[in-house]
Image 1 (cartoon, rainbow, N blue to C red):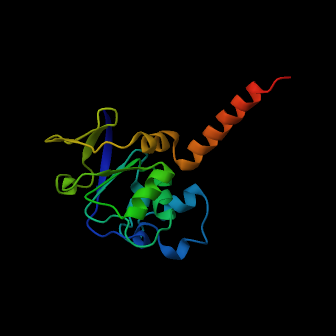
Image 2 (image 1 turned 120 degrees about the vertical axis):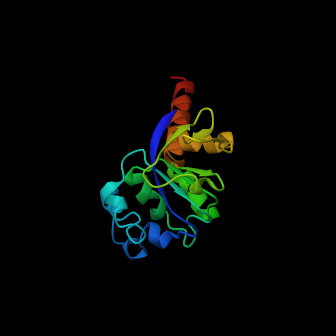
Length: 173
């Protein structure tokens, strides 16, 4: 099990407060995007988040627009897992595509506070506090493969490189 510090937020946190829309087309680069993560919801977040931190939230995390910067800003800031009662469908899929693990655990945000440390065992599918251990819903193998590769693009790049190498090996010279 690995330990993770948590940041706890409420219901209906939309993509405009996860990553401000005013920066969508003007900012680039991992550090720049990370510096503006959650600035309209929690101005202390970007300056204090640490690699491996986890966001725990209520219902409908990531509602609003489908902009992927609302996922990548958190990933670049060091967030590795998002746990929520529920996610916007587009946001959930953007998390997977960007290699950020979304976990649906209804009510978990009421069991932890910002700054608490939780343990996560991805292999066993367990999220634990000092008081309770909960099973994470299993992910299909195809989704797990995307997350294990670090996102959809890295998975496809590896797949095409592997296929290209196989094709090269089968060509008679």
